Image (cartoon, rainbow over all chains, first blue to last red; front, side):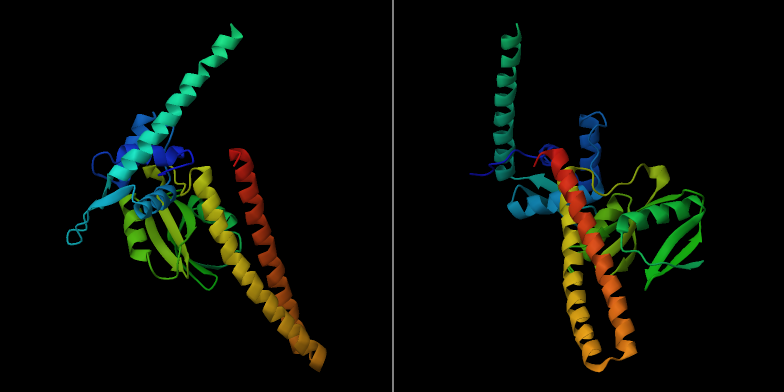
Length: 106
Length: 172
């Protein structure tokens, strides 16, 4: 089992934002754009989430150029993709079942 | 400008630093309760205080990560770091969701719990010295340690209250 509990909104969007190599500030920007400014991650929240996902192997370091002090970039791993898709399946199930609310009410 | 102040509540400390910035004083350095300020545009910076995971390990990585976010690590006191961001670059809040806030306050609570245990041990040792010798000096020392222990107890309790509050909001 890769993930038994639902993903937090922060983790869900970070996984999405590192589908292609992305750095910290880029991740915050992309998530803000995707959600129309609703989800703007704090730097501490992002730092903690990235480190925990690196440890779990959901994302990996894509580049770290120490010489030029280039920004670290992160990339989704196949395990991370699996976790994400499992969550999408769970969300689809929620949406499918949500339709039952209307059936009952009619 | 130098100011001496003792805080045991980092949220109150952040508010005070913001207030100083609004009055045109930018915080620069902290050492043993002494805060160094330099003139700035009123309200130029926002401040946050964070607690690092360990005493030495990840500091450079952390500082560089924050730098990329437009956040400057301006002073460090043991595991505590002082961060600032230009107000013009947007709002500044380190932890934005319930999960990371809970993790943050849990870390702070554990930090003060250890301090509290040490303080209680010191208190008991001093108290025994007072009982044995009846010395006034030991008596005063015991009183001071007792007050510090109560302050630590208060902050541990406050952290716990915040964590419970966040958990209730999130239904976790």
